[in-house]
Length: 233
Image (cartoon, rainbow, N blue to C red; front, top):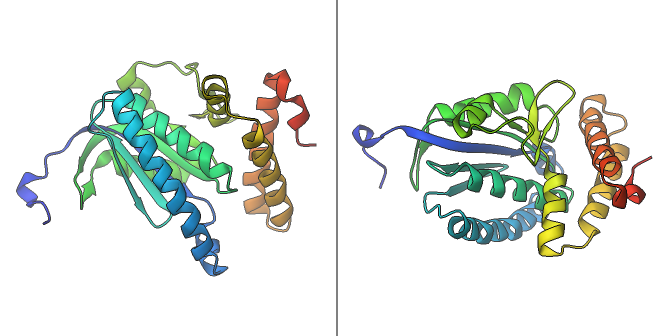
């Protein structure tokens, strides 16, 4: 049952909007069944992570929706759950060679089981389309203002163009330290960046996205000497 229009109460939410890079190409290459299975497997893990986040961050309001190659996360009160699950999604997808871009914002939103609408989502979609450009999840100023976090917060990085983004490899290091993940995730990240740079070497527009990934990957390795052997030449 759809909500009555009179009951669409807009409230302030933290919202993350993520989109899979190259999803149209995946469909055109008839790889949708292969990718759908990966997404289904990951979505099941994401749902599990979401339930864990609800408990860990005491956030029963955390919601996640997936439509085709897009994911939307929202919470009225807890920025930390939206941020954590978004970083986890990016980290996990990268291990399958699937890269995402997106944005995290704070503004008005209405969301239920069938319907989602509001400025927060529109703002995140606009920022993704016009500014994200590379496989990065941008942090909007509205998010910083609402949380009173600084640009130097752990797991944030400032890019060459001044945008703040989710530093998912630093997040990987956090997981490695606390959950004893092995280094295979970083090895896979390196391998898929190299593979995509080779695949798209004749397409300058797409190639620049994976050159960005290479620079980001190498910067992380340069900042963490234990990963110096993972640098992409």
